[in-house]
Image 1 (cartoon, rainbow, N blue to C red):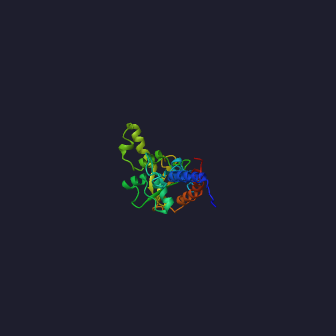
Image 2: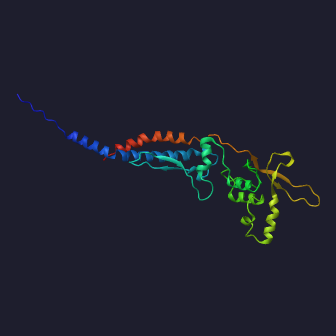
Image 3: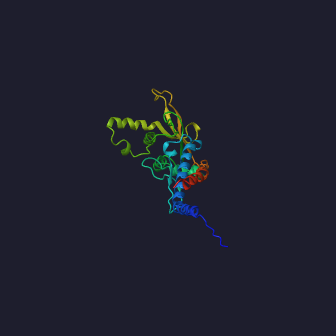
Length: 250
């Protein structure tokens, strides 16, 4: 007796073609899924940044960039922007909040130290008082820093007064005394502003208030868990994105 077994291999052929297609696209799909998950993680970080950073600027919330993964290099990277046309790069001022470390000198502090207004181990913290009101982000504007530096002689006269007429230059010089560094009335050492009208005919001296507190080097505590936020969101998003890309219709 002869028995013939016939096997329908059409389904196996389909499976083989599917497997080959998956293998050929796996690295590409993996890289794409990693990149999409990384961008989702970055967007999530932007959304939660105000929980950790007081009144962050747009520059701060957009500080993290993504380096996409590639089929030949299945690594998606996050990083802080370390360049800036104007101002301080985000990587420089956010890193202490992320890692917990001493704050670096700011540009105006270096200028004040160079001219002897501040001592080599002194840093400043602005007070939210008139005329140095903080903006909506809790910072002072660049123009305000320039004003204070000029009045404290922290900038060269040619840089701030060189293009001013003679009459205006004399007026500016007189106004430089509006700010001073010291310990008036036994108060802590700081940068103070004189307020009120100038005394006339032996009248009472003007009052003053603190515009910058002078402190030792501030140290930030690690209060912005960037790595944890990004890692958790990436782990949450990647599996579903990968599954959608790998098993999409070919």
